[in-house]
Image (cartoon, rainbow, N blue to C red):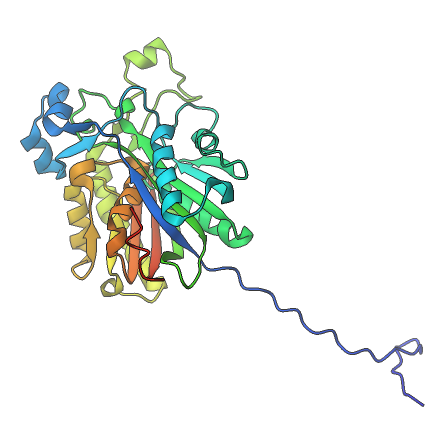
Amino acid sequence: MEHRPECCCGCALAQMPSPPEESVPLPPTVGILGTAAFVPPRVVTNNQAGASAGIDDAWIFARTAIRTRRWADPEQATSDLAVQAAEQALANTAINAGQLGAIIVSTSTPDQPQPPTAAFVQNALHANSAYAFDTNAVCSGFLFAINTAHALAQRDSIHVLVIGADVYSRILDPTDRKTVCLFGDGAGAVVVGPTTASSRHLRIVDTELHTFTQHINLIGVPGGGSRQPLTTATLDAGQHYFHMDGRGVRDFVTTTVPEQVRKFLARHHLAVEDIDHVVMHQANGRMLDEIYSLLDLRNATCHQTIDRFGNTGSASIPITLHHAYPELHGNILCIGFGGGMAAGITLLAAASGSAGDVGAHK
C-alpha cells in the first residue's frame, strides 16, 4: 500500500512532485540604435551675435572658442527643429514612427507652456502609438531623458524617441555680453530600444544623475512662470531673458563635474584611461578644455561641435554624439551639466554590429 505523508492533523497528503521553477527572463539589453541632428540653416557670426552687446569676434572667440552658431528663423519653433532631427533618426534606424512606444523631448525652451512640445512632435510624426512628454533639466536634460528612456525600453521592450531641442535665441538679452554670444539653436535625436547582436548600437551601461540645489540661482529665466507671471513690469525688467552667473557656473562645473566623474568611474571599476571617447555638454569651449585637463583625458577623443554650433542647450550632447557616431568605439562617456544645478553622466559601450551600418548613418 502506498504511503502518503500526513499533516499535523492526520490527513493524508498526496505526494505531488514540486512544480518546476519558472525562470525569470532577463530584461533586454537596451541601447542607442541611431542618432541624428538638425540645426537651422541661418549662420550667425560672432560679429553679428555680439553687435548689440558691443563685443566682436576676437573677444568672443578668446573666451568661448565659438566661431559661429545657428539661430532659428522667426517662424521656427523648438518642435520644428525636433521633428527634423526625429525624422532623420528614424530613417537612420529603419524604424517608422508607428513603431515608437514613447517620445521624450528634453527642452527648456518649449513651443509654449502647454501642451508639451513632445505632443507637437508626436502629431507631426503621426506616431499615434506613442505617448509623449517633456523633461526639463536645462542643459543636462538630455541625459535625464536618456535615463528615463532606458528604463521604459527595458521594462516594456519598446522603442523610445529621445530628442534634445532648444531655441535659446528667443530668450537671450541682446545686450548681455555674457550670454548672447554663447548660445545657438538646434536639435539632436536618438532612438533607444532593445538591441540585437547584428546591429550597430551604443549599449547604455549606466546613467547617474545629480541636482545640487545650493546653486539653484546660478542659471535661470525668472519671469514667465507662476512665481513671476509675465507683466509689463517683468518685461521691462528683462525677467523673460536667460540669466547666468558665468563665474559661478564655471566654479561649479570645474569643481563638481570632475569629482562626480571620478566617483562614477570608480563605481564601475574604470580608470580614466579606459574611456575612449567623451561627449560633453558644449557649454563653453574654454571651460571644456579646462575639464579635459582636470580629468587628464589625454587618451580619450573629446568631441566638440561648439566652435560651429555654440551652446545648443539640451541639444548639445545628442548633436555632438551624432557627429561623432561614425568614429565611436569602446567606452563612451557622456557628461552633462546645467541649471539647477544639475549634472548627469552616461556610460555607453559601442557594439559594431554588421558591416555597413555606419555608412548608412547620415
